[in-house]
Length: 286
Image 1: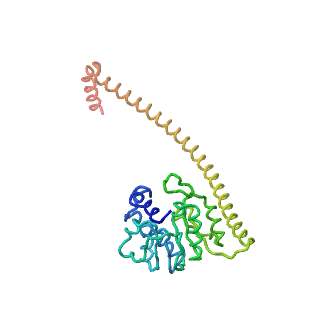
Image 2: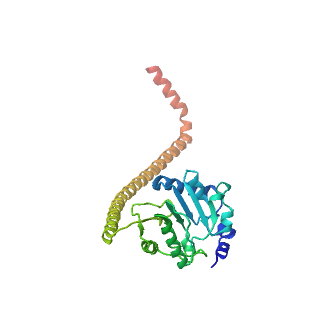
Image 3: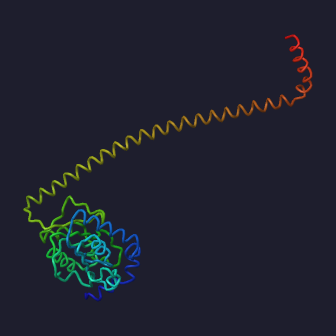
């Protein structure tokens, strides 16, 4: 498939409809790539970066604003035509299937290879590994619904392809600020024993973390159950008090009605003079 034909697949319609929210120079997308650039600079400290599949060049722009020599390449002529004027000299139309001309401290490849034929994706990985000792990589493992996702693979599939190039995951690297499945692959001359040791160490840590979280979850559930029991008892007590309060209000209302009826009765009115005279006489005798 030629570059021109691939480019047509990633034109204006794709960027408006197939990237979740419209892919444009918006606060959302600029903020997303600014955060990625900030983390890359802080954690990986690269001097030079190639964004392989740079789209509109937002990451290139964000990295260059932080003093990193960043370049971008993308198959889409439409995407490159939307690159900001300040970085037009650093982004170009091209295919990552073709070998790169330069070496870089870091190559970034975010959500690109799932759009490529399997053989082309493997070639691209070879090009990454020939041009850098570090590859920051992300490719969705489950989004099959998007029309251009023709090569959706599991993380272990990509790990195998990188391993064939002598690149392995940095197991302590957390790339979740990009996607949950982002990995940093680095060139490592490891024996099978060393590789096994590294993976076992990480596996043990994750297993221990998982057990601890499960225990905490069980403990939290027990606490929640006790709290729910207390809440139920409190609600029952409250309902009882509300019932007694309602009964008391009813009794008060009934008593008030009796008093009103008594003071409104004929006998109360007839005996009023006698009550007045009785008070007078008591006052004189005092």
